[in-house]
Length: 289
Ligand code: AMP
Image 1 (cartoon, protein in one colour):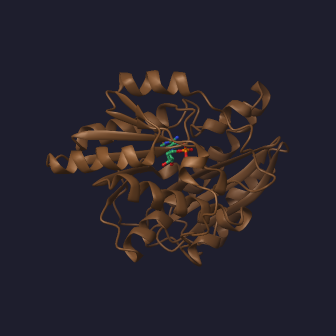
Image 2 (tube, rainbow, N blue to C red):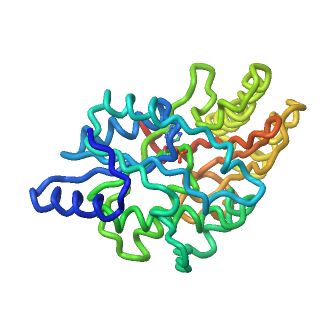
């Protein structure tokens, strides 16, 4: 495994990989790796000849009052894990390498970037789509792997790739959870043992919706009310949003008969957590059988 910090060198390596007729798989991350990230890496490994993982805590996707400076960083440990997964290249550039002084260009996917997390975190998705575009341009991957954990991000990146003719296939991998259902996240390390217990409420609220949907309830307003009620019963949780939306446009849907994304964000202590499920309407097959 080779670690690269220069964008020019990463581009040269990407070009070499393509010249050899090999399929380049790319997994963008912000490091502090856990099994969720590693599931993307394993999927990439199984579908591609060469796997590149980026580790870059992207400042432009954090708001001024957010956790950029205290975001967990564990490069040595991350490297060891990626080596064990037989990753070929780690791309770990500095902030200055990705954002040279004087850069004023942004990639913005309008409208959809202002929904869900984009509404609570203004400018967040502009930072995401800008950095993802830059990383795509730098290494020109054939396939890029994202997690369903960040459902809005996956939909926005898909839209961007379609709108801007990026020649890359986006693969979205399922959410990896702890045994009790909590979605794995680099931010879970912020939680005290007590908050860690309280954090399960997000998953519980989604399971409540799943159960009602399984029983035939398709009215989104009723399902949202039930999900919100579960969150309200945990006093430590401050709800940011609980929404049922179209998985592609992130626009609210009135009923889930044709399938929908159920997404929740809540703050436990000072940690903002997100989670989601995709519910299927009656007669639609559930993903994964
Ligand atoms: P991050 O390092 O948080 O930017 O995440 C990098 C990638 O890993 C994103 O595509 C995330 O959606 C994905 N990811 C993070 N947590 C999980 C999880 N629990 N299950 C699946 N994918 C995840």
